[in-house]
Length: 306
Image (cartoon, rainbow, N blue to C red; front, side, top):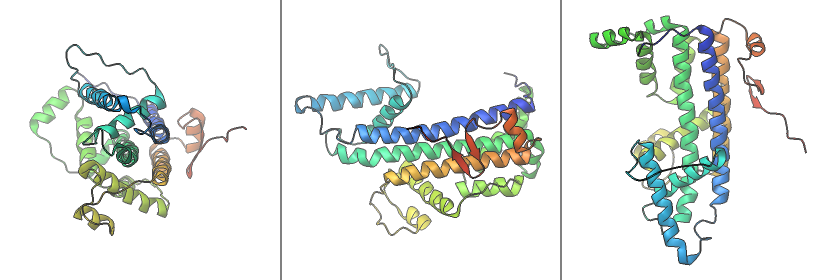
């Protein structure tokens, strides 16, 4: 399918929407964690003994069916419908994801959930930042495609012909660039955006160190179920023993949500100030910034009236 040329205004509008969606996703993940942890803190001890086993098996069946549906394969004769919205749906999904990672749905599930639910929150929050950094880099390259010349990436003749027919050879190069950049750490990606593109993304020193540590925790959770290995010890300098499982506290989930929100905000403003033709003040008046109290130092909302 042919890719039509997108105007500069449309590019900035699309980037603005991605920015707002990223903030919303992190806020939803944090809220869902709070709701999930509170709702299931007594689970499964609060289940009636007579039905406990069947209820646990039912949860596992629902979760496994949702995983199958997520992969685009719904068993014949089955219908899967989720009617809950927002925090309820996200909390239930977070619970099911944590529940499914248990080897035995009937044993030690309470302590298991206390570990896995914050795992789910951290994974979701960092996935949002990862996607936003990728989109920010792609956006810079879309509005300043000459920046691609600094990367001597080669593509095959076949790719060049196929992408040129679709009118998307630049987009193909951007995909290659962002894919390669995405394999680095968060701090290395920030440094690349600052040094190669001339941005000015700022972080608080304490946030930078904390984000790097939690990024390693997230990597361990995703790739080794949170069980400490030699690589983790080398990367973090942790004194934990190999084979033990890391824990993620409630405070760490909240701090990660706030630190990554601040970082996304800093990236967005830096890209605006460097690459948009108008000033930040003009961007405010034209609606390119979020409809909330935003500054380069962070995001705040009006206090609730009591």
